[in-house]
Each structure stands twice: as structure tokens, then as C-alpha cells.
Image (cartoon, rainbow, N blue to C red):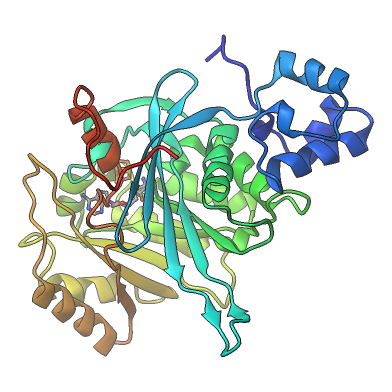
Length: 370
Ligand code: SAH
Ligand code: SF4
């Protein structure tokens, strides 16, 4: 990446003020980036040309472009971005709740959206159920490339400044394996003069690097964590998530217990349900035992199959029985609704599909470039 210019999205306001003098100009540029979602220097109307020329020498405004976009019938939009070095990553725009209007059409509650972002090109963790793992690891994303996903999705969906958004670090890659960029991006998202997305609205999902959970906790950024647990015994977990051999279940549970969480909140445990692997009531029973003493909530995820996978999607009946068992034993548990099921819902699937289709023209009428 050495021959590639960094973007202005790499910096906190304070850092930008070190680059741009006088400092009110830095604040104006920050506003152009995060309130107007400027795509280039031309967009920045009230910034003197000399300053823009100076900045352009050193920094890009937008470090990536939308290479592909798929719109699902439920409103989910999946994006494939092309980075400066030609590598591709995904981000997803999810509509969580429709706006509520009164009888006069006045908005009572804004629609709620969540953006799912990637943190790496590929992933080192090698999970056997995950398409991202199949392509191996290419590189970490910079903080600016993480931030740019949110700015681009807000821009593309005309999502006005100061409207609420949640961020989940559940796209491609293992966020805690790229802790420096992750922590920086979290700070940039929080900026009062920028996107103003509080840490409470940001959830880091991890496959369970227990030492990094501790490191994130020590940074005390205020973010939520979600643990991709997926199995209740180390044998199966190591089959599904090979790095479990180095960070076993008990080390993760201990790290979660040390993690600073808002006392009103719960730690989310994601449990990917795979047919005849971990969908039995005996596993549900073990899960309750494992999470006792933790203010936890469980999110059950249907395994989303793809060509060549050895695993199957569980039946709805088994999924509901698993959920009911947990709920009846006092554990909060939801089933993740499969948003975007008709596009390529789970992480890594749009990219893979793109690679399969690279030589073919994109023909689906659901796909558009703008
Ligand atoms: N690396 C992090 C975050 C990205 S993966 C982590 O593993 O938590 C985000 C989520 O997608 C994880 O919970 C992962 O288990 C899930 N996932 C991966 N492949 C999937 C598949 N084929 N079907 C359903 N969920 C999948
Ligand atoms: Fe990486 Fe998460 Fe996929 Fe595992 S599930 S390979 S940690 S992205």
C-alpha cells in the first residue's frame, strides 16, 4: 500500500487539525466529509482552492468505489467495494425498522438502519463454515477504509447527517485481528463534529481471540462485543473455528467476564446453528451452563449454505425448539432473521459470487451500479 495515498478518512478531527491550518478549516473539511459525504475536493465549496490543491497532493477523499450492489426484496442492500489496490470487500445496509408516522404523515420515529462493515480483506481464522475464510487472508483494512464503508453507504442511501445508525463489525475479516485500525475507526465514528455514532451503537463481533478481547476492554472505548461462539465443546468449536485451539472456550468466557460492559447491557453470543452438528437440545443445555453468571443474550443464526460446503441449514422446527429451551431456562434468545436471504446473505458470499461471475456480465435486474 506504500504507493497508495491515504484518504482524509484516516484521521480524527484533532489529527486533521495538525494537517490543516487554520483549525476552523479542518473542521469545515471534516463537515464536508461526514455531514455532506463529499466524494472529491470539488464538492468542498467553501474551501480555498490553494488548500484543496495542497491536500490533494497528499490525500484522497474517497478511498474506494462501489463495484457492485445487490438490493434484496426486504430492503437489505449488499455492496461490493473496490479498494485502491483492486482488492474487494463487502458492506451491508440493513433496514431494521420502518419509520413510524402519525395520521398526518409526521414522523414519530425514524427508520432504523444498521451498517455491517468489513475489517480485513479475507481472514486468517479459517472457519470451516465461512466463505470469507476460503480465500485466505490478503491484508488488514486501514481505519479510513473501514470509515469509508459507512460514509459511502450513508451517501448512497441519502441518509441524512444525525439520523441514527448502528454499526456492526460483522463483515469480512476478524476485527480483533486488526485492532489498531478498528480502534481508530471506532474513535472516528464517535467524533461529535463527524458522524457522531456513539460507541453504544457499535458492536464488535469476534471469533474469540481472548487476549485481544482483553486488549479491546483495556482501551475502554465503550463498544459492545458479540462473541461468535457456535459450539459448546472445544472439539466441535476447533473443527468449526480452528483458532479455537489457541483460544479455547473457557479462555473466551473468562475474557468476557473481564470485559467492561454497560451494566444495563448484555453480551451477545452468536450461535451459528448447523444441522446435526450443534442443533440438539443437549447442546442447548450445555450452553445454559456455559453462560451462567454472564449477563448474556444469544442470537441463533441459521447456517447459510453455499456451493461446496459440507454443512446444512437446520430445520425451522429444530431452531425454534433450541430457542424455546433456552428461553424456558431463563436465557434471552432471539433467532436472527435472515435479511437479504435472496441476495447472498452471509459474510463473504457476495465477493465469492463476484469471483465466480467475474467473466460473466451481471445480468440480474436487481443489481445496479448507481
Ligand atoms: N470475524 C468475526 C466477524 C465477521 S463474521 C466473527 O467471526 O465474529 C460475522 C458473522 O457471520 C459470524 O458470526 C459468522 O459466524 C457468520 N457467518 C459466517 N459464515 C456464515 C454462514 N455461512 N452462514 C451464516 N453465518 C455465517
Ligand atoms: Fe473470519 Fe469470522 Fe469468517 Fe471466521 S467467521 S473466517 S473469523 S470472518
